[in-house]
Amino acid sequence: MKIILIAFYLLALASSLSTVPLKSMYQCSCVNAMVQTDCLGEYCVWDSNTSKCSNRDCTVFLKDDCEGVPDTFNCIWNSTSNKCESFKKCSDYTFTLGNSQNCNEKLIKCEPDLDSIDSKAGTIKCKDSTQDAFLSIDNCNYLPYDACYWFVTPNGQQCLQNKTTEKCEPKTITKCSDYTSDNCNLLACYWNGTICTELTCSIIPEDECYWFYSVDLKSVNFCSLNGSSCVDLDVSALSQTQCLESTFFTYAWNTDSKKCEICVTDSDSNSNMILYGSILLAMILLQ
Ligand SMILES: *[C@@H]1O[C@H](CO)[C@@H](O)[C@H](O)[C@H]1NC(C)=O
Ligand SMILES: *[C@@H]1O[C@H](CO)[C@@H](O)[C@H](O)[C@H]1NC(C)=O
Ligand SMILES: *[C@@H]1O[C@H](CO)[C@@H](O)[C@H](O)[C@H]1NC(C)=O
Ligand SMILES: *[C@@H]1O[C@H](CO)[C@@H](O)[C@H](O)[C@H]1NC(C)=O
Ligand SMILES: *[C@@H]1O[C@H](CO)[C@@H](O)[C@H](O)[C@H]1NC(C)=O
Image (cartoon, rainbow, N blue to C red):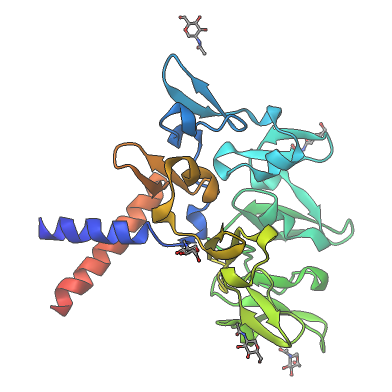
């Protein structure tokens, strides 16, 4: 019983932080809206017969919504047909070498497939992502120099341009000041004068006050406006109507607990249980 209580305490603690692992971001869907008022009409449809909310079909979305809806909608903008389509698999997509990051940015859990480079055509295909980092890649060796920005390798290094050799090289980065003068990672850092410095919500302008990445590109920190200043999002203070939208479909309102709670898939909750299990074990061993 004591163990269960500790586990619940840890879960509650984890769910009120403004930082979430990247793999938890955008994981809610309209199904998580348990009442009609939460079933956001732009993206969801409410079935009054069954009192269930479901995702709208990709085909109804224009470009911005198509690219903006959470991963669970599985929508991809096809710029050839100018239509919003259902995403099937990473390997269906080919980009020019200089746009390799489109595999990570435009698709869902994909990364550039370095074995698929066609240097004659100047193209690269995508494959399933091998790790939960934004801009993940297997290694830096074959990444075109022009596309060599902040990709994360499986051992946690980042691919960076070496201006002297004009090669794409892996480098160990643990903080913003590890970046050299010209490759400051603006997804996680900003220029304070000439020093590449960790971003905080308070640095972010009002009209861009959404979130920023951790330096390892494996988690995101949510921000929100308080008046005209950008501050850390306090998830525990969100009301029912704010929960889904303020967290970009990462948390949803649980009408039973009356709290804004993180949406996790089954595989996530298994790994969370393993994580909490090992924290518990550590706590017991430390006593
Ligand atoms: C709800 O039920 C009514 C009556 O059975 C039916 O006519 C209607 O099409 C149903 N609506 C939906 C959205 O399924
Ligand atoms: C995009 O649309 C074009 C034209 O309809 C189609 O040929 C192509 O297969 C689509 N691309 C993907 C990746 O589905
Ligand atoms: C670029 O490569 C040169 C030669 O290998 C090396 O001496 C230098 O430290 C590298 N620069 C960076 C920023 O890693
Ligand atoms: C930015 O740099 C200035 C001058 O070096 C320093 O005084 C200030 O504390 C820095 N700001 C942050 C947020 O680190
Ligand atoms: C918002 O600003 C007000 C006034 O400065 C302050 O009292 C309040 O605690 C702030 N709220 C958050 C969530 O930071």
